[in-house]
Image (spheres, rainbow, N blue to C red):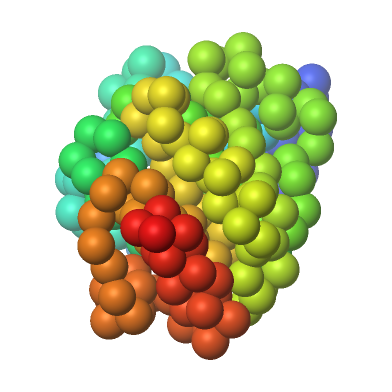
Length: 249
């Protein structure tokens, strides 16, 4: 049976595993490979989870035989497997699975992108150290959210400190926004830097906002184009047709 030890320090949680029978919950495999089940166990292997100040965690593995504390990292960028990396590298717990902004893609390379909400789970979104790093990596300087709930003031403050502007044009799932809110979307985009647009999953409301921006840019779009942008609801299609008539009228 596997035994797990637990200790808590300031901003740090440590987990340790010992065994009475062969096989352990966490251990080394082939020198620096980290496996959930490993046949070799070197004393007490400590897994240290360090909490970042803005949210998120990193994993570190305890020293053995005089080795320094080893951070956990991917074997390579395309592999789901982990290994014990070099000192000085970090591996965010959030990066074990899909990207922070799922379904991310450029609509206009380097200028306009779309995705799901960060850490999308139903209608939730979350801005922390890892999601801000993601935005910086893509040069994103502006967020337009079509979510029905605005970010808390603390998270909006983190974005301001990071030099990223944020506009929440509140919209309920599978409903259209008013023509006034279309103007707000365009104003939030027009003179901003590289912009990402999202709602929840990143389809209907996001597609509606992307279509509105394209109409304001002077593109001629019809319902086939709106649907290609993932607009799904008849009310959203009708609102975009009305916007197109207003712009071209």
